[in-house]
Length: 297
Length: 219
Image 1 (cartoon, each protein chain N blue to C red):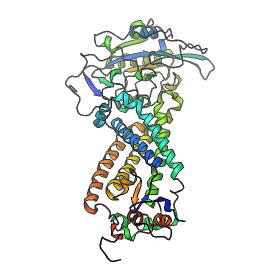
Image 2 (cartoon, one colour; image 1 turned 120 degrees about the vertical axis):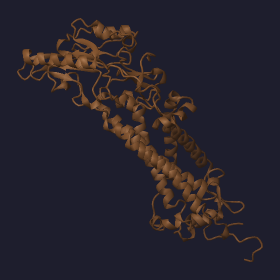
Image 3 (cartoon, rainbow over the protein chains, first blue to last red; image 1 turned 90 degrees about the horizontal axis):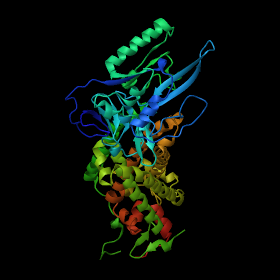
Image 4 (cartoon, helix red, strand yellow; image 1 turned 90 degrees about the vertical axis):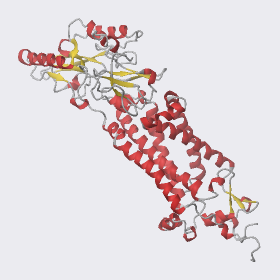
């Protein structure tokens, strides 16, 4: 939900200017998830459900260490599990904390037609305002990470708010608070990138993970959640993390060129018909076929 | 074959039966609602339309149902009219003389039947545009029910729906222009059902001959 202390820099479906935009610059906040030290304990899942006052959610056992197949409208944070067989035949358990990535260029916000249903604060957090949500589900189409989930009863869409209510008061998000291994960090984007880079270097230099690296995809302008991966060349192994996420091409086509072409065509069509009517007017009724009164046949 | 039973008093002739007229207005009403709410979702500058019509949530909820109503209505038109909408040799001639039609020199047009080639094309444009809107609309209606692996369906639907809608709005503007502004008497035919003999003879000579046969119209 919105916080008065946070300024807004982007508003979905909004006509005209955005009040207060660029009047103040804030530090970009960021979560750092070090997948190499995550033990899959699910404390962050529980903390998320607790802090956000969401009810118990039934779990599904599918012979993995994953709580359920996918996030839900009231379950925003899920550790995705993958048993990866390496080339030498050894196994590797990959755990990735999956939640909203808080993209700098959010596909959900781009696709949303409802005024103010999705906002991006000046600290980079992307937040859904359910009171303005119309439940169309375009954000689901716009998101390259499969994050927004619709409540089919209330017809509103929900996702991780990056604990905006905590962050705006200077606290870290609930998931970060609960992590027992310290694989979760929270701070400014700059600091988190620095820390992630150090960890990736450590993994390369001392632990034999030659491909270790940081995941901060440029296709969506960078994200407010970044990962340290053992193998940054294969992010797909980590629960289908896309290698090159971007706002879907069709959404960009629809919201930019098609919109302008369509608007021009509609307005041009109306003007064209009006001018055509002025020039040619209505067609003759054809009454001249019927002899006027009094005329001799 | 003549159809004298279609000839109404005072030199008028029945063009649209009551079920045809009723169905036309079901289609028109649902189309207007779909266009209004659709334009609200199309541009933030038009979102006020959704607010005026009960709010964004209400518009989002009713838009698909209005779409189903429109689809049913177009389906009825297809059943009722598809035979009459078949392109015939005279339609080729009609296209060749299109410039006469555009410049209102209708006496130089080849004799159109009950529907001229333009009306037939408009019918099929509405029909196929409606099919694209219905199929893409169903995907958008239940967009959250699709699994992530089928997200390409969402991508196809989200781009086809506005393209088809723009196409339909183009059809709609031409249709309203022709029916209300260009051909005097056409609007009455879809309200009261009849047109004058003069209208029939001028715009649809083939249909006129079909009705009166070789006899002269009763005055």
